[in-house]
Image 1 (spheres, rainbow, N blue to C red):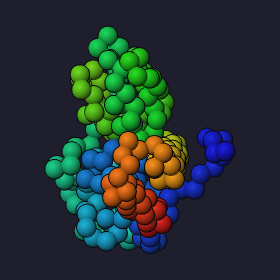
Image 2: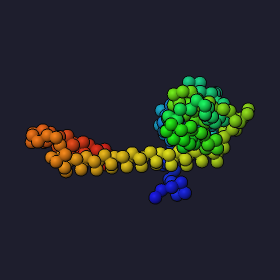
Image 3: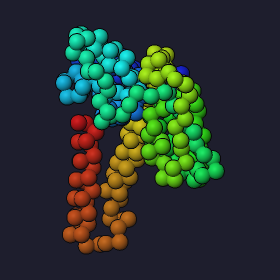
Image 4: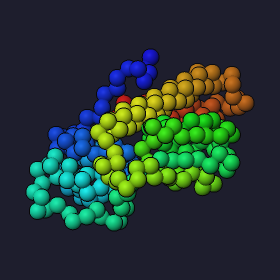
Length: 234
């Protein structure tokens, strides 16, 4: 059985250029760049769909690291981050106001590194050393009980972050994605088994006895099963 004690493979991107960019990103998985995660942003830069100035957590030094990874001349570096995607700032962590938390679990689902503990209708809390300051939990919170608190003083960008924290965040995000994919596969298996059982025992479990109606139901279930199997193989 997979656990956090077993190593998970770091995502491999389609080409060496994207892989090189991915290695120097801060791995906060904050989506401020406009992409679902750091891997998506790395691939977009590699294919010239995105600029190197769209990562506020990395800041100016982050741009320099990306430029060095792809061999971009210093003279061609952007003067600053693109303000459309935010500004460089200090490292932050999420803090939940326990008095206002309603235990909805939306922040837990939004957290890319599983840094929030709690359960439905119970108070949630943030494990500070695991928080990347991505802000996704605060965005998801329906009662605005999450604040992003600066913890690095005047230090910002990579001066407030570190390769060790980036590696930790990437490993936890990789495991988070693995859990989501496993849960999705297990749910698909359950639904398929349920449909197969219903198909096998359709006549005895149905309130209808008309053969025409039963044939229509059978066709619907068979079509749904075929679609699910095709989706799994694709």
